[in-house]
Every structure is written in structure tokens, then in C-alpha cells.
Image (cartoon, rainbow, N blue to C red; front, top):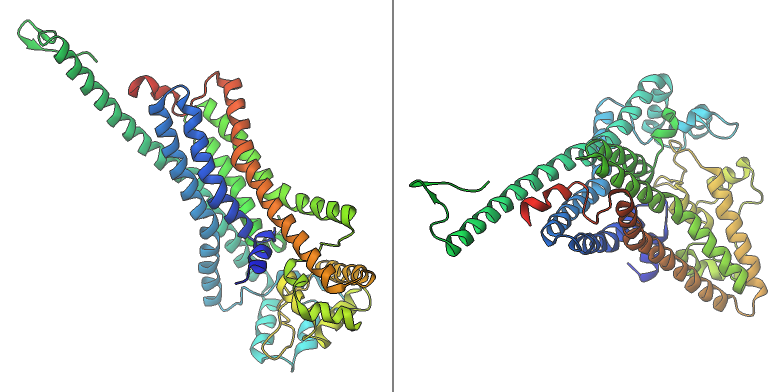
Length: 423
């Protein structure tokens, strides 16, 4: 895997790769350190407990968050297949436009693709209600199970673990006090000769991407964490943190990416809307040089679909598969089970056109493409860096300030009461 491919992956806000980099690589370790330092101001013992809780919570949540949803989805797909349906058939096909839909696709692709594929489409068409319920069940399971584990089960397990740890530390503290008292005054604990001690619609949700499901799960996780909080102050504290995380993980990055791309264009005239993988593609650059870049003639659904069907080997069709979820079968026939998102394809077409026009005006198309690739890669890394800094540093600092304002203490609200027991 090349460096450009890696940068492209972490820059795709529709996939989970940016979340993996921000969450596991930058955000969590920084949060653990900040949590310890914040609580240490009042109690080193509570700071250790707080850091321990943050470590267990963050990495366990990351594991479920990033792996749990795909795993449950795969298990649900197996169940759906056992029921005789193909879970890959897109429910948007029931929208039935003039140029694509379940009836249109059955008619247009019959005889061109495997009869099994047509049979799958016909079965879904004749049993729409059953298929919708199965996909709704898949969505429900793939979000609810991780949500309940992260929002309810995991916090209770961590709280129970902390309670045991606190009791252990409390017992150790008591033992040390008793040993200290014995050393200071061996007779102080003897009295009267006895020992004594001091004491959405289905179609919409069925087509949610993994990232969409992660956002939904995160919302449920937030509600679960608030509901299972150990006290009111902890519920407020967790609510503030989770609201910030939802915004910075799912809302801010796409807007930040657009802002950075526009800023580069205004400052340098470089069009960096395209992915760096495309900008590095020599075939794409040569097609611009030779004036034979093949694209749909217009933005209509009819033309976009016709172009994909007639030109499966073109650069446009290649990247339509990679970035716009278009699928071809092994015989280069478009998969009729997949709904084609024409808006995404129009955007890709226009971005290719605009880049081509700007590149032709430059002194060197190759040099222009290299500069654009470097600028786009820089924007992606800047986006990751900024959003990671906001998540890992700015948000915790804001949370600590908010906590201090609400509770008057630097300690984790759920652990504050344990200070006197273990310190």
C-alpha cells in the first residue's frame, strides 16, 4: 500500500479509517494522560483510578465501535441469506425511476447477467415487506447490540471494577494506618484487655454506511452513559463530553475538508477536490494531456447510467466503483442489485472536468497534478491533525473547565466521593 493510498483512506470521511487514526492513535492516549493530570491536582490516587477507567472505557469502546458493527452486520447477512434473500440488494431500487429500479433493472439486465441475480431481484420484488423487515432487523441489531454494550453494560462493568479497586485501596489504607498506629504507640489499640480498631425510514436506514451506523451507535452510547452515570454531576459531565465527540467525529471533518480545499483553491488556484489517488493516476493525467478523457456528456440520470454501462473500463467508471459505490460483475456488466447514486457520480464528473480545465491552462499538466496531489494530501493530514487535536486536547480541556464550573472540583465526578476513602 502506497503512502498516497494511505492518505486517501484516512481522508475519506465516508469511511471509518479517519476515525481509527483519530480515535486509537491520537485521541485516546492523549485523553488518558490529560485525565490523569487533571485529577492529580487534587488526588494522585483518584487520578490513577480515573486514568484506569478512561483506558478501559476508551479502548473497549473503540474495539466495539470499530469492529462490533461490521461483525454484527455480517452475522445478520448470513441470517438473511439463510432466509433465501440477498442482503446486498439495495432497497432504493424500489424508488423506480425511469432509468433504474427493480422492475427496470430486471427488464434491462435479464439475459445479460446470471439468472440467479435476476431470481434474487424477483424474489425481493415479490416479498418486499419481508425483505424490508429483515434489513430493518439487521440495522437494529448492528446498532443496538454495540450501543447497549458500550452505553450500559461496559460502564457498569467498569464501575464495578472501580468499586472493587476502591475497596482494595481502602483496605490497604486502613492497614497502613493501623501499622502506623502500632509503630507510634503499641498500646494505643489495647483497651480493657481487648483489641479495638478505628473505622428513519427502512430504506434510508438499510443503506446506512458503517460510519452512519457508528454515528447512530455513538448517540445511543451517549444516552446510555448518561443513564448509567453514578451521580448527577457525572451525567452532566458525560453529556458535555459526548456531545462534543459526536460533533467533532461526524459533523466537523467533512466541512473542514471542504473549507481547506476551497482555501487552497483561492490561495493558489489549485483544484484539490479530487482524491490524491486520482491525482496520482498517470492514465488520468495522460488522458488530460491527450485530450481524450472520457466522461458522461451531461449530468442526467439517463446519460450517467448509459455511460457506466457502455464504458466500464474508463477512468471515470473505475473511480465510480472506488468512490461512488458502483459495482460491476466479473463480465463488466453493472450489478443490477445496486442502486446508483447519480448525485455522487455527477459530483465526481464535475470535479474531473474542473481539474482537467485548470490543468490544461497550466504550463505543465504533470507539475500541476503533482502540486494538487501534495496540496490535497496536506489538507487531509491537516484535517486529521486539527480534528484530532480538538478531540484529544481541546475537548477534554473544555470538559475539565466545564466540570470545574459545575462541580467546583477537578476530580472525575463519578470518583470524587472515593477521595477520602483511598487518599
